[in-house]
Length: 221
Length: 138
Image (cartoon, rainbow over all chains, first blue to last red; front, side):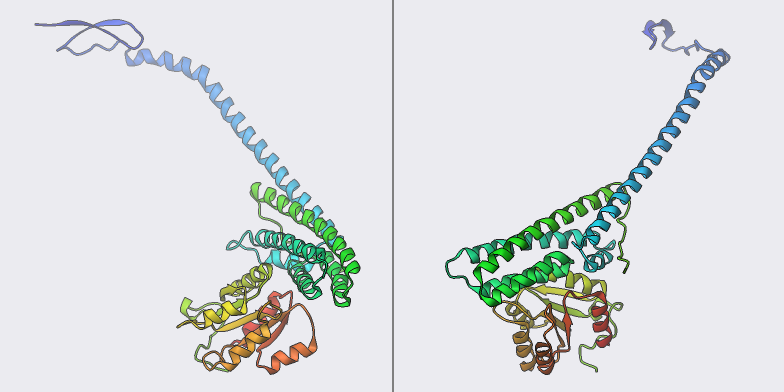
């Protein structure tokens, strides 16, 4: 016994089919051809247009990001040049930069951060020693020596130089002299801290732009 | 000069032939710098922040230390005192000791060399200083 069943096709047209019969095709292959032609005449230009737009956008992004990369580089080099010219950092810093490689890409950032943390602690210790009635000049001197040493190790030239008179005041045992020196050292520290933090920020921007940080080298004049 | 722990060359060779340097410095900045300098010359580096900790490490069964590089000025035990203890110890006296200092005091340098220091480096230590050490270790 044949069963007629009405089944809804996706486009909602009902058609009758027999359970044991083959379904007769509604769209013969030749009938597809005009549809294909319509499709190609409408869709193809859009596709071509779309591909063109895509490549233009990709090119624009590449050009813009190359522009951004070179701008990052330029900013970094200009700023670093000023920092070196004003004597905040010296050749020791560039030597440390040259020690950076793919094994330790953040070496200078790490050492710089250690230096800033260390220096804050030392400055607080110096203030603490000078705050006392009886100043322990030997302890003071040892602290100043540590600050001098770490400044030299990072290449913080001006800070290192400003530690020298402090060292002398400690030897003389002059509390007043030491207090003045501490003020100068603290001031100089803040300046080099701001320079280093800006350098690190600019380096991060370069790395984010997908380029490696330029290796600086000082030209002797 | 040849020694039982004699290194062939700095850099290269299997890990067990790698020169192991013990770096002693109370400054975290200087420790980081000297460690990087030594590692970039392919030394294996252990850092400690005091002479006392250095001696604890050296007193272990197999310290396997081929060279000691120490800062001169450290609280509690100076690099010079550490040098003396190492040179007076029969177990440790063969280990070359290098002293570092940020102060260029000729008397101090001479005293260290007379006490048996291998070399005396002025801080900040440069890659060229480490290269020189490497040549001397051959």
